[in-house]
Image (tube, rainbow, N blue to C red; front, top):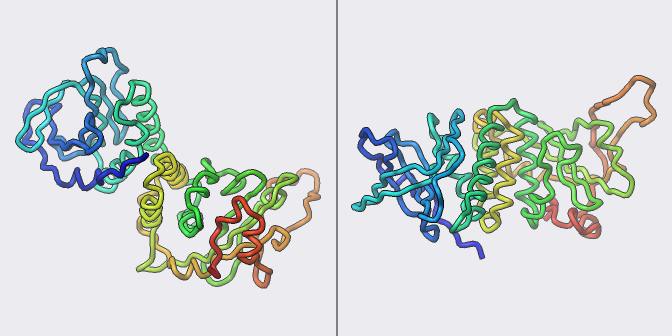
Length: 337
């Protein structure tokens, strides 16, 4: 059973940075309830850190420290921790977010929130190293160029958030943004397409409309229009976090796909908001037979064909038809709900 965790962001916000001394391993910290070996800490510079207390049975042999642009990891540090009126000393693995602004620190704490149940109450060195590896991958992904537009990712997140079972779609969601289809499960495929304005004019690759034999493809069409009072990618992620709170592996996958998709464009994505209500009302699903396409018989030397298809006037799948297909399609929430 997954025990509901208090917000690490709230615990961190309630800490006052310790007075700076020569002790570089000094932290103000709070014990994380139900995780007695863990502390959420704040160093003298006000940066957040997760501290995992090591017991005497664990030797001092450990990997060397890891320092990235905004992430620092060190094992077997002798730390001094101030917890209200108590002072605690001991050996800790310390995972810190360094030289970062508030959005990056918030992101760091949110990811830790997903990692804690995976780490467990008594993590082995191997489990800790695996968690550190996942953090490193996420932080490195945030330095890469974007692999998809904010609008495209927003539309995918909307389809997940509106689903009858969002966790099912998270499991079926592509890990790599350039996969051929956005969602795959068994012989079902779902590709999400978005457009601004009021015309369902979407970009396709010819390969997307030639699914493998025996598979069934449905295209989800969303009209995503910017709105000053709309919802951002971060808003939809926060909404999904509350729905996936008891499934930490799915939460981590959510953060992974967002990081891999937006890369260093994640900050810009916080400035782009879309009309959620109007997008939900526009959410429509089409069978592949309704998608205008071109002949797959291409001239010699022609490949990697992309084109725009206008779905205006095409017949959409009803909610009942989606349910009859079962599986992946049965959890998709139709705009006529």
